[in-house]
Image (cartoon, rainbow, N blue to C red; front, side, top):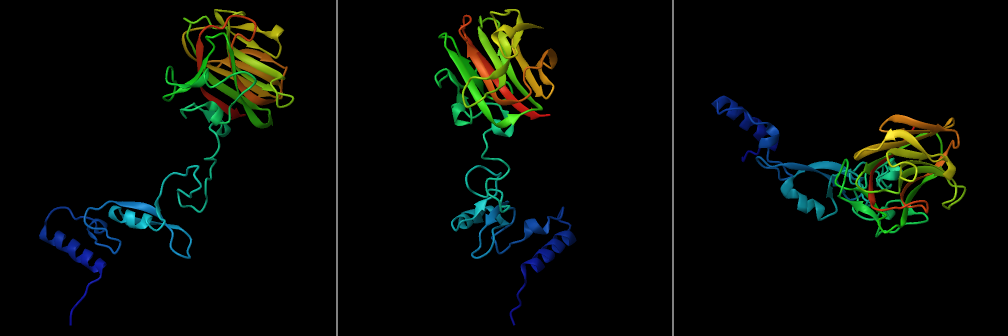
Length: 297
């Protein structure tokens, strides 16, 4: 009678043989086994989401040479979840964990997408266009790109993101690259509360405003008459602007230093970057912003 052996028995025999003959370190049974999935000596394995007929998808581990055969009938290699209508991580959920949200909707935007910010939940309101506002590699902070706003043609650019609802107890931060060689007019981070879907409303501004001061950063608390120098000296390089809004009012920060407080506003529904003359002074040059963050307090 012909004798047959199961694969596991072969693995045990081979492992025992290697150990008994003193042929060096014993390889693991997993690396020596020849399985029905086609795993042979030294082959690497991958996890795939397996879709058997009439059964729920589940994860199996197969040899790399078997991947093509599995993908041919609808299986796919496991990956991080992406916004593509596929259960990439094979956990039974599709496009979960906010993967389809814009970066700013998830609370942080480093402008790494390489196309117009208006494709990622930002809007021009009421001024701005893609020829003057786009992502660029000229002065990136944490990644390869940052937001570039060009007002060298004496134009005004406003890039705005509307929060889903009016919010209090929130800190909005962003970085500005201050190039002292350019005679800026008006380059600021702003947060505010629009009474409707228009650009009219209350806002707090923080950044560069040369008609107020060429030597210091400036802030505004909701009206043109409220602009004032902050006492924080301008210097070339990246600087962190922060505007905190709570039920007690607004606090303004530059590089973590408190530079002003105001009670004019207790909630916001938009975040905005401004660049241009705003009708009150020259705007020559351009500005980079990066790493805007919205943090609930």
